[in-house]
Amino acid sequence: MFFMKATLIRSLNDPKQLEELYRKDKQSFTQAFNELDASQKDQLYFIFWNTRLNYNEKKSIIIDRKEILCIIILAIVAGIVANISNIPGVEKELFFTRNTAFLIFPFISAYFIWKQKLSFNKKIIIGGAIALLALYLNCLPNNSKSSSIQLIYIHLPILLWSILGYAYLGNDFFNKEKRINYLKYNGDLLIMSGVLLLSCILFTVITFGLFELIGIKIEQFYMQHIAIWAIGAIPILATYLIYNNPNLTNWISPLIAKIFTPLVFMNLLIYLSALIYMGKYPFNDRNLLLINNLLLVAVLALIFFSIVEKGKNKNQFFTSILLLGLSFLTICINIIALSAILFRLWTWGITPNRVVVLGSNVLVFINLIIVFIALIKVIRKKGDLVKVQDCIASYLPIYAAWAGFVVLLLPLLFAWK
Image (cartoon, rainbow, N blue to C red; front, side, top):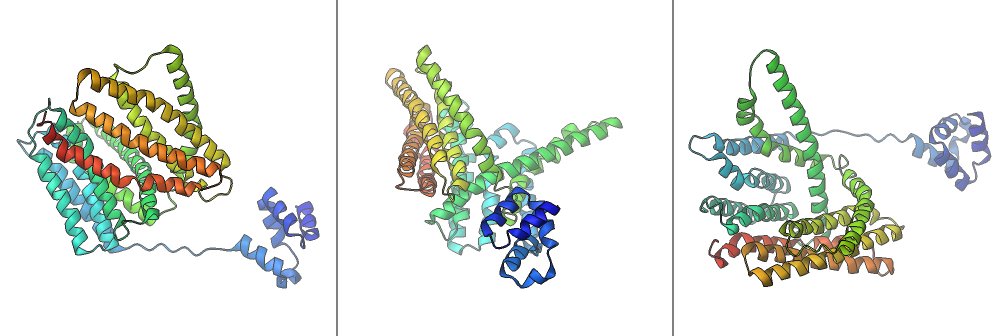
């Protein structure tokens, strides 16, 4: 401590040396600084460092009772809707296959409608769209062999997610920055919902164990009448926590992306090398084609969250090179997969599944190419990483339109086959 204080006194007129001392040992520096002679307190450097080291931000926690009431009401209504499955005569499996998405997205949309005080016209648009989709989906024939209907079940959450995005954007529909924030919110929502879900699972296990000790089997009753309320409540509560505590989770998604981006890069490099070496191309394997579509989406998500923090930094070169390599490998793999999809169409003809796999692949592939070009501009110092985010965020309406096509028009084109 004596050495730190002596060095500090010698360096009082050297800002660079002071900064180096502070970064080397922040705790000792702070303690030594606070022991300086009181005669120094009128000096400009003392005022600056004292403010920096001893500034106490006054944090006030304000709880909006109306907002809490709104969250509680939405969670209760979502739980009531979920309990429709317990009505005698309702087929539970079919109910949840069709309506699980309606237990989540409409209620989060309602929260943002209330939170952002959207206009009456926007409320009508959002509410009307959700109501018509719910009516449409629950009037579909119960035909498990229809590929068109199965595709509706898969793409409906994407369409509802798009409606949620419209509610989130509110009066700033064309604001690119808010679209970027919406994607960030989705990453935070997944993380926070996962934490709450794990907490609920732990609570459930403890509850089962406690009642087991006294010889009472409550598993079936608990899952049927209590746990079912969590389906809608968890995403709503997670949204409330994220919206009112922005620093709670917004660093986790970029951290996960930072860890997994180099791992995925190495994985894809080894996979592509093995694919070429072994000559096992996915022309007859449908599962590989579906996995490849998921890979495209995952890579876009990694790229987006990798640059959430990096976009504001000047040292973008290494990040850009890594992301460029990742996108290049994915493009190479997807060219092989795309040729396999076209081969299947040419050999076995057109089916709803093949049309959707091809269309989804092409849409995400084009988005990835746009991102790849933007990354090249970053490396050539003709752009920055924020523009890469814009390339992803600006593409969201196209995904929404595609989901709408699959849900509403594709079944008609294939006569519900």
